[in-house]
Length: 386
Image (cartoon, rainbow, N blue to C red):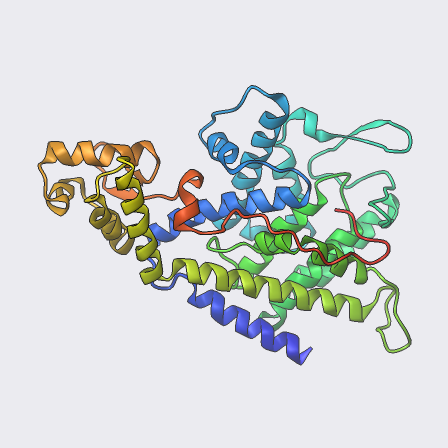
């Protein structure tokens, strides 16, 4: 426990430093990008490989004709909208217990297309509809894991509520990690448990003063997905000897999962910290502009304008021409390609220009943000299904 407390403290310190030098408007733009990233990786864990460009289009209500891809687009947009509710504090009054769990499931599943609300019993072929926010009324099996029986779900979630609805600040990060396993182990809903658990963890970490919209644990979990599932499975084991806790599950296994979870959070905070370090970002921005200018996609002069938006948050339209060293008419012509690509936004005819980070332009500015790296660590016998 002392080692976990030390790691929790270090994680909190690193998270509080993350983005400290960024302008609030730039933080908001990064948050929009990170929500899309979180959705991408959370869906990837579930086997739903939604392309970043399709997520980008979904946010603009541009849906493809193919029904399967369209369903995944709708699902992605729903996930992002629910995380935005968390990030904006809309669900803070729900606490961190089962009321929040049910609300997250309800909000997410109510946004899904009808096709994704039906699951099939692999043994009988029976199709069962998932009811948003409602606990399951049937027993299920997830891989080799047999969650608690349906009739016990309410009482187990009541115990979850007792254990995780309130936590001391000093142990809140540990509680967030432990609650992630316990929620996955109970498996309270017919479907959508994995994404609900990860949204819950995001909300829990935010309430603990560690989570924010500048980083996402889901990216780390997806990039070490085999270790993620193996760690969950080990925490499902019964006690491994007389000294392994007094409950029905292994205390040592849960401790190992919490340790893995906190390490994963710390890795992602560090990763985003490196990406958002101002001098490094501005150098990548310079390279981006130079590369695009060589391809005749943008005017080389836009670097100074974009750099000022990054450091100052926004640039009044009346000042853009002076920064570019051209006339007002030329300034509008130079900026238009940036607006068309979503790199610069303005909320009205007379509103200032702000920097934005569309998914389609993220590769150079935010290297490896959407790179899928799968961990090859083999899961233990009885591997955990999501």
